[in-house]
Figure (cartoon, helix red, strand yellow):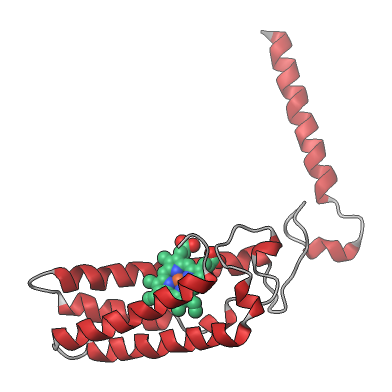
Length: 175
Ligand code: HEC
């Protein structure tokens, strides 16, 4: 089918020339701009809103994983203490720098999908307090997991869970 072949080739050529047109920036300073078509919003920390939101969501997913591991083990009649200890340590290390994950411009107004509510930027003092409360409880949980005192671990786990819930109630959509 020679005719069809020709039009496919023509389409491919057209695609190539479009790519070429996009690739050749007119201004020299645009050479470093990575995402063609994306709005060039750069946050104060040098990240794009999408990079920042992706990064914090990845950390938060890991909170969820660590939390589920601990929860599952604490329900077991023979909890895997090593798994609990590792998960609690991960929760602490994942949460390092959490107070820097929500810079101005990384909320829903950025146009990037996020469950972070505008309330975060309306109440920065309270939000930071919630971060600090969580980090304190997570550190205590991690300390508790270094003992074999399952009851103490359960208490610390419950207190940590309250800080997740408290923050989500005010600052996270869909909860
Ligand atoms: C200081 C506030 C705060 C604390 C504390 C907090 N979170 Fe969140 N969490 C958020 C916000 C805000 C989002 C939405 C982030 C986004 O979409 O940009 C979120 C999102 C999440 C997500 C979804 C991530 C995704 O996009 O897939 C999980 C899972 C999660 N949190 C688990 C936890 C767990 C478990 C804890 C406690 C161990 C916790 N969070 C503590 C504020 C908090």
